[in-house]
Image 1 (cartoon, rainbow, N blue to C red):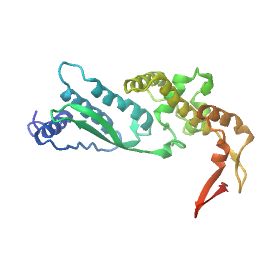
Image 2: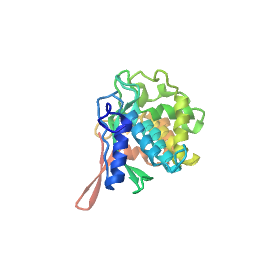
Image 3: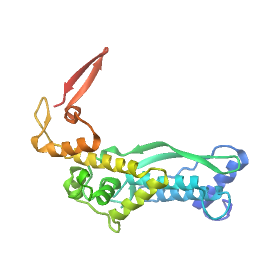
Image 4: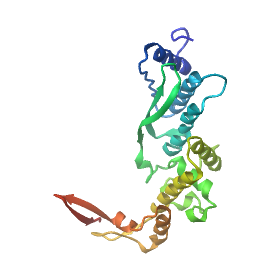
Length: 261
């Protein structure tokens, strides 16, 4: 329905933008805003799905390109959504997605121009909240992989254990990993790249278990040797202790290594 005849609707807004795009050949913007839990992420997905539906060349199936664009959402959400005290699937990021369309209204491609993430959630979460979904998804999906060292579950990692919240009501992390793996496949990531992503996530969890000692010049404790060894194996970083405990300071072309307290 044309805007103004009935109450505003997600599809009506998308249709208005689509028709104006075809009529004026000019760029259109759809802004989705609202407080936490109001449905911004879901509304954004409906907008993208509608535009993909309107751009199809015929039949009931979306074209491959539109499918890839839509399947980027589960990947971005796994890395940017988390359980909070107000919402079990809260988007802790903002994004600006740019969809390129032809003069005939067909989708040509898309890119995420901005992705602003709440980085502070990675090392710390409040009571009753969780870290980003992807950490729990990888643990559930790769717990049988001895090289990743995730068999003890999320309770074994400092980045996940502080809040005391390890699950989301009604959600199985094993199923979430399967959905994420399928989405990564749909956007062109083969098994090797998916394993590389899982290795990065696992490596960060082991790195987070590192503890330090010393005042003016800090160093990892002897008990941190195991988690750092796991990190080295997953990341291939030989001098990780130096990277953690020393920073480089460059002045007038000279670089000085400064120990961290």
